[in-house]
Length: 217
Image 1 (cartoon, helix red, strand yellow):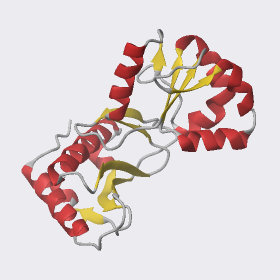
Image 2 (cartoon, one colour):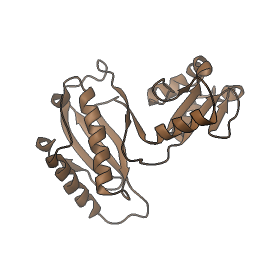
Image 3 (tube, one colour):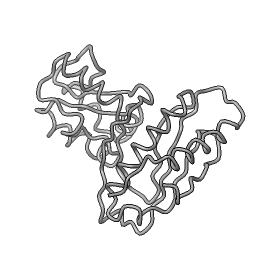
Image 4 (cartoon, one colour):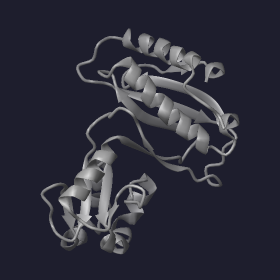
């Protein structure tokens, strides 16, 4: 099993972040993206779906719930409103609007039938790992929201993975810890681990990518 998080890798990431911060200032808080390019990896044969908990929250996630009745603790699409999403355009708008979807367990068959064709390919279907509630209560919703806010969902659909791992306003140490956590989990779940790794880059929203020396990883 590959280990990550050594001094060389941290130094390499810090050097890359320093270069990115030299770019001209933007009028918004840029996202820090981690780009992992793969090789000798068959997307069809190797299904990689992960939920990774990162040490430092990146942003507030927009969450939508599929519940029997409306709930004041989370934005809700109730069962009676499912009929409003028979149109694919409405479904596509919905999937873009929210980062995560959660659901009442009893509604999952109907959620799958109504929303699955769009949420499934987007990797946003409520899952037992993170998103299905057997009991809807304020306590359970808050617990789930807290867990979601510190997590990243990954569904590898192509040989280049691009993920938001931080914000420009975060401390370098926090961004680095998030990168190491995400990179480590991706690597661990690749069939051939480092042999599947082509290159690693990080970038801000509006900058060119900074390549990380793979020999330091």
